[in-house]
Amino acid sequence: MPPPDAPRTTRFLTGQQGEPGDQLPRDVCTRAQSLDLLRQQAVGRLIHTEDAMPAVTPTCYAVDSEDAVVIPLPIGSHLAASLEDVVVGFQADLLDGQTLQGWTVLIIGRSHLLTDPAQLADLHQHGPQPWGRRAAHSFLRVDPELVSGSRLGL
Image 1: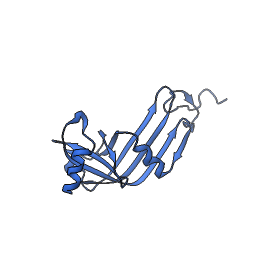
Image 2: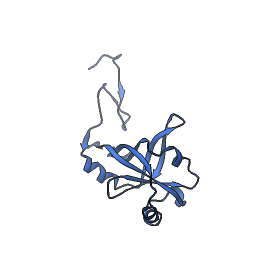
Image 3: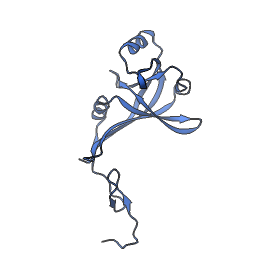
Image 4: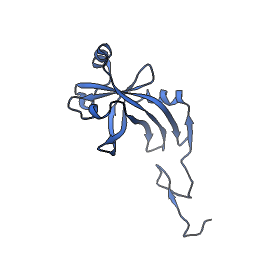
């Protein structure tokens, strides 16, 4: 038993007290498993910078046939101008607050605005929609260079 003044940590998700270094049990996923998990969700978070500050934007998305994340940008979005050819992150997860189980996937990659007219026409017709089903003005593609995923609480 540690002395009463020993440092203690709060375990992620449970809020229970634990010893330094305690972690939620997790299984690390392969790249393929992580991308398969991403395909199961439709909402995630785009991680980028805005005015040189960290920013996280919730967004709808889809994973295309080349394993890239495609994000719709609504009309009037300021993101299109600032996210061309920059490194961004994208995270999606499915976490259950009752069972304290789930998964999380993070990708890091370079973002590009899609410009091919045929691809844009297909995305406008069949691709992910922005929040509130507003019309998408453009689409951002994030090519996954680094992919990490974990199943938590198993």
